[in-house]
Every structure is written in C-alpha cells, then in structure tokens.
Length: 164
Image (cartoon, rainbow, N blue to C red):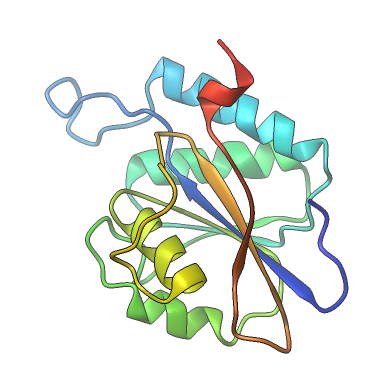
C-alpha cells in the first residue's frame, strides 16, 4: 500500500524464522527465515511502499530481517537500531509515545510478544486483545490520518500466504 498525503503507514514486522539458540547463541535467521523474509519483501516491493525508516530491536535476527527489507525495497530507506521499545518483552508505552511524534511511513521489526501487543494497543487500545497471529516473518500494515490518533489495520500477510 502506497502512502498518501495525510496518512501515515506503520508496518509492524516480526523477524523471520531463527536458528535455535542451541545451534547458535545469537539466533540469526535460518535459511528458511531468510527465504521467507526475502519473499515477503519482494511481494511488498511491488506496491512501492513509501517506507523511510526501518527500525529494529537490535537482536541479530531482527537486524538481519530489517536489512533484507531495506535491500529489497531499494534505496532511500534508513535502517536503525531502536534504543528502547522493541525488545520482545518491552512495554508498549515508549513506542506508542514515540509514534505520536512521527509522520513518515515506518517499519518496525521486532519479536513476540511485543509485535502483537503493540498492534493491539494501537488499534483497539488494549494490548491484551491481540487480533493478529504474528507468525515468524509476518507483517501487519496499520494506517492513521496524521490529524488523528486512531490506527486501523490496512492488511496483514505471513509467509504461508505466499505458498511454499
């Protein structure tokens, strides 16, 4: 979905499938995880999203996911590590407060349970009322008018929807 004047799009992405911790302590993306993210990113690139920033948690698998998105979506995307608010068990408050001052289309790459809680809090005001099954590699696109504080779900996709 292409951003329009007066509308902000927020892409909330869960990192791709990771290598188990007993195989690698940093849990980087697995071969399947890299493939799934590349496929989702390629699918997303066809709509020419106006994402300017891709912010990730700093964990290896999230950073790798963010870089695949940036490379696939093309030049003009800034990849940055969040200083707070995108860890798996971080509270949603800091990110919600940060979002209030943003006005450009942004992608957040994080982990469970944060991605589900953040989407739920933004859309229905209650992070305990999750409504998206964030499988590894899934992305949800939320939108809001820049003159409003109300977010709505535009769409969501997971690697399984693209087939094998």
